[in-house]
Amino acid sequence: MTTTLIAALVVGLLAPVVRALAWGVPFGLLSISTVLVSFAGSALTVLLIGATAGLLLRVTALTTDQADRIAGGIGALGGFVLLLSSARRMRHVRGLSVLCQRLAEEDARPSALRALGRLLDGVRKSDTDRHAALVLMATGPLTQASLWEEARAGLLSIDEQRLAPAQSVLRNQALATCQLQFDELDAAWDAIGNIPRPAEPTIEVWLVAMEALLLAVRGESEGAQAKLRGQDTSDNPSLEASHRLVRAHILAGRGQRDAALDELKALREAAGHAGLERVLHPDGPASVLARALIDAETD
Image (cartoon, rainbow, N blue to C red; front, side, top):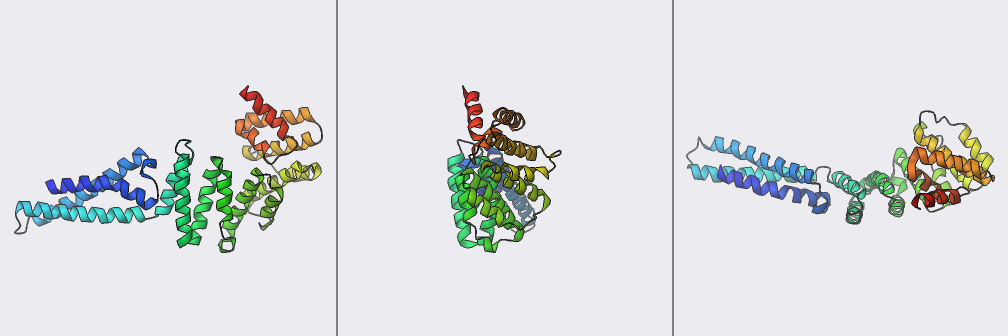
């Protein structure tokens, strides 16, 4: 049993390293819980296989020492094979999940971003369809971490002709959102225009809200208001916040400064500081008012 215990310890210690390599994640970015679970799972697997082999070998003519060594070897081999199989199963998705979680942590973000780039580049060379799916999965975490340039670059790297219709809609919706962050209004219009309309209802409402925003920042207040008029936001606080943003631009564009400020303050109350930051891009009539409110918060 001694050999089996040693084998369990060795394979258990190797397990988190093997998983990190298979997933494309730097070892330092693995959480303590992931390391412990990986160690415990592999060690217990080796113990189970080794103990079972040891019981079976007792009925043979082998000596106790010989049986112990053979059982330990069988346990180590079986445990390591299962470890490799487990680590490779859905390895890209698992690696992406770990890296996206780390993007939310400022100190880990640079390392996670570099590893994410290597993972996506590697997958793109071998499987363009999987690459597209992974990029779409990573877009949300990237934008939540304010990594808009990286998110846009990933979306633009996708070959849209190879996407399924649902993936194409998600890609163009996300791309339009990213383009707005860089005040690329025409590019945002083009991305929305590539989506067959009407889209699925839960997506269509956001496309309409985005179109209203584009009209509002261009000073086309009547068109923007007409877009908002057909939407019900009573059960969708996030959509209501987007409507407040659009109304703030409409009011500011009409010179109704106080009314626009009221909308911005209501937006801040509903969505916090991040709500005001959304007013800054694309740059529109209410952006200067939002900047003043943000500056007042920091004074």
